[in-house]
Image (tube, rainbow, N blue to C red; front, side):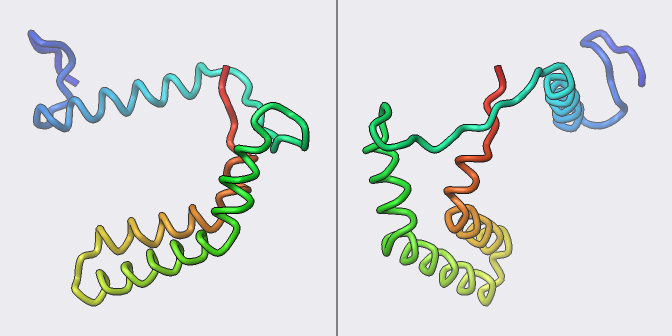
Length: 112
């Protein structure tokens, strides 16, 4: 590492230096953060249970969720055959995230 007039220079271009700086800042924030608590699915009668039930249980775990996942997978296959690799990866990852939405929502930690 070399010191420059504008700060630390890693010996790469300006964009790479900014990327490395923010990556280091992100790693520092993760290391300094405290405990994480998982979000529990609301029970019947609790605040916003109806909204959670309608969005997660009836829409994404129902027919609409299956249709969206199938459409994303079909679009991903189309992008694979037309050699659009980035769009292929994004659509397959998005379909996988949507398929496992409930487990992702309930296991996602909130850092305080």
